[in-house]
Image (tube, rainbow over all chains, first blue to last red; front, top):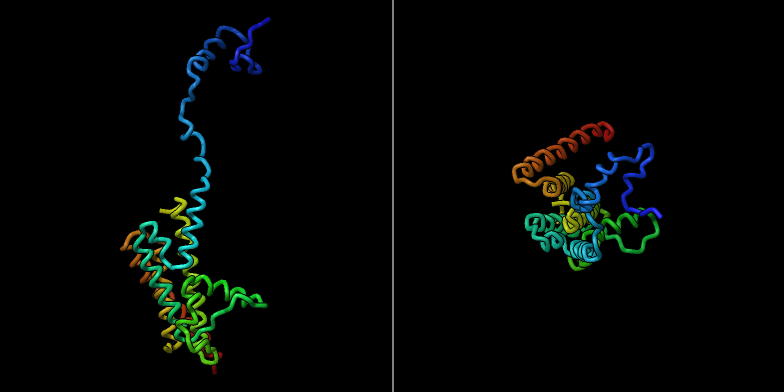
Length: 172
Length: 58
């Protein structure tokens, strides 16, 4: 009964068994460790649950308080700019009596308006505190305020995406 | 608080320019350069669109 060896080099098609094949198969038998370490050959392992959980936490905090997602990760500059920019634009829109879209809307534009406004986080949740008189879009200023409010929410969503990318190591 | 159309547009252009600069540039010098160029581009396009639409208002 012939002895079965794990060496597959002598079973390649189109090659004749002989002393030459034995010589070429010797280094594989003597050094089973691959030439390159695995971390240089294969892609990095997929992110574990802790990384995804951290990204979700950062996203929620960054949405709720503009700039907080960057602050948690030590990005002071972007945190200050994010809070100041979103806050200034949202407060300007509220003080100009812009329209704040409620969650329940039937038309598609209302849904888009709600998504944009809600992106401002705490400034959307506290909109009625800052805007005691309510919206008034009968004047042009109220219409400008509506646009500023929506822009503030969209800008905060950009900051949220940036914070998520930083937490996952996709952006420095 | 009431802002005119032009004042609201200037506020919008400045804040959006600053945000884009901080999200897309890393060095302070390139950020400042981005803010200035984006802000001027916002104003230029707004004035150009305004003058293009001016005949339609008369």
